[in-house]
Image (tube, rainbow, N blue to C red; front, side, top):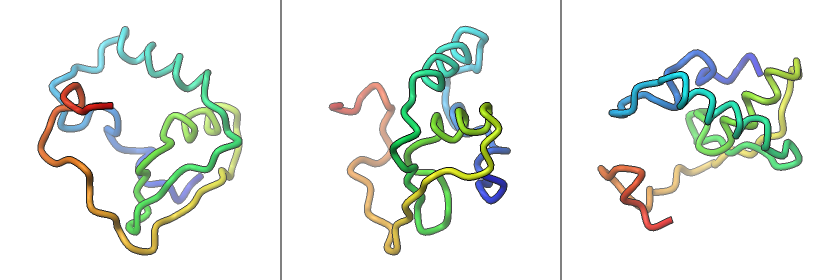
Length: 90
C-alpha cells in the first residue's frame, strides 16, 4: 500500500468543480464501505490507480498492507477526453 502514490493526492476532487464538502466525503465513505476487495485494483503503466481507489481506501482503513492489483504494460487510450463525468454515457 505504501507504493500507491495516489494515497497522498487530491484524487477524487482534483481538477473538479466539486468542492470536497462533508456530504461529498460521506458519499465516498459509503462507497468505501460497500466495495468488494475480492477484485483487484487496476494500475496504469505509471503505477497510478485507474480503477479501485475506493478499494484502496477500504484496505487502508482495515489496516491492510497489501491489495490485489493488475497493471497495464501498455497504457490504453481513453474512451473519452476533456469531458465532465456527468456527460459520460455510463
